[in-house]
Length: 352
Ligand SMILES: Nc1ncnc2c1ncn2[C@@H]1O[C@H](COP(=O)(O)OP(=O)(O)O)[C@@H](O)[C@H]1O
Ligand SMILES: [Mg+2]
Image 1 (cartoon, rainbow, N blue to C red):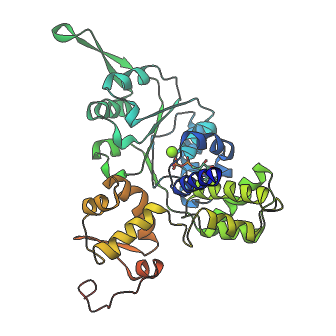
Image 2 (image 1 turned 120 degrees about the vertical axis):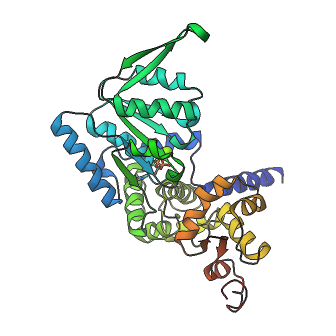
């Protein structure tokens, strides 16, 4: 009995994290093995890939470090992967840090002043850099110069230090939050969008190949359509279906295995996760379809507004379940249908 209960708890816990688009430490190791290393292995995002490949080829021909690159888009779509690819394609060393990891301008100055020529500096969550660090960064990006402060108080002096050419690759889920002066320092900005089902199928087939597991085409299609347009989620579902196939099936990742595993983990037909469903439910039932402000909605689902806005909302909007209006978020008819509720009469306040 106790064991059964424990199993239930772990399964429920796993279900909660299964379709969230962020990655935890444990998952990072699993992901590293599946990460494309070169641009030509990177599936989908054709426009971004073409543009980026031009930027990199041109820089290589000139024998120079490429322009600074800004990557934006929801979690799990390949920003970190692309940053690593940029370094690999340039044959350049990669330094990884993030906005929240840099507490003071001095931390950033230390990183900048130790960069090698041509090095790629990956700044994840760049929108969370502290303001003084941000100012230091755009001077460094523009003039390849940083002022190193020596001493303290009245005796302190700034020693200008010239930096070797390097490339900043910034990643953000919220490009709109970057101050214009910082955004303007990026010579190339790429926005990653959700992947189409056929692209996710290719991601899955590639990953299954790397993992050495037999994936039926019908299973690949099923998983692709329930991965929330997100490669990270596709890979995660693939690992769970592999578990199911090995433990309860014959090892083959068949359509039955895929559907059964997705049932166990309560992944719904659209691949929506707990937060997505909570947002939809709150919108439809608590707020009568809205419009409701982001902050109010976030409080209702017990999340930070930023999480609701950057993690849940983009996919709900893109699926036509939620709309953004000047007065707030509204549920669209598909939201009620998806929750199995009756769509309110269109002459009501909402659509009238
Ligand atoms: N275009 C792609 N082709 C193949 N796999 C991808 C692609 N984009 C992302 N992935 C996979 O999804 C995972 C998450 O990608 P990541 O770059 O960490 O996303 P982000 O940094 O945007 O949150 C990676 O481990 C990688 O294996
Ligand atoms: Mg990342």
